Structures are given as structure tokens and as C-alpha cells.
Image: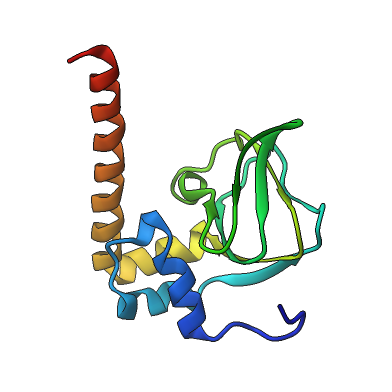
Length: 150
């Protein structure tokens, strides 16, 4: 990973395409989203998100590796294509876990304000995101129904 080289738009689009939230958004449409993201670098051990903080952005891992945790308890680790904060982008609330860089990491940060403006201009992105969220919620409902024996 180069400390000074910025990702090309096509590389940003490829990273965003791996995010479940944007799974239904065509690549050519994701160019608008890719132009909104900011590249943010973190050294190994740096805290990216503090549990309890209220923020309105998501992070996509472009390069490197992150750990999502509560204290010393690791909930998950993610590498390239991983994402944290999808729901904070849509409805800011206190973060439920902390996130720390495991190794030097390049993240793409997408802020809520510019994203909402893009949704106003490009309703097809909003429709695709809503469709994805509906499928995610249906998956949760199906899992709960199976667990309950319904």
C-alpha cells in the first residue's frame, strides 16, 4: 500500500461493489458514490471507531485489516471489502463496538450528508439500497422463524 497514492475511481467502485448495502447498485452508478468517499489511512493498532460514539459514516476496507471488538472480545475481523457502519450511514446511533486497525489500513469513508444528496439526485441508488435492506431484514426474519420453529 502506498502512503501517498490515491485509489483510482475504478478501484473505489470495486471496493464499494463488495459492500452488501450497494450489491444491487450497478457499477456505473456507483461512480457517483465513489467520488464521495474519502480515503483515510490508519497505522496498526490505531482506533478507528470508539464504542458509544455517534457518527454518521461507514468505512469500507480498501487495503489492510480491521478488528471489530468490545473491549478485548473480538466480534469479527475484516480485510479488503469489509465494511463497518452501514446503519450509521442511514440512521446515526451510538456505535455498538470499537474498531481497531490490525495492520496499516486504507479505508474509504462515506459520510451521510453527501450520500443523502446523491440519493436525492439518483433515486435508483436509493431504490437499490432499500431493496438490499429489505432482503437483509427478510433474512433476519427467516432466521428467527427457523429458530422459533415456525
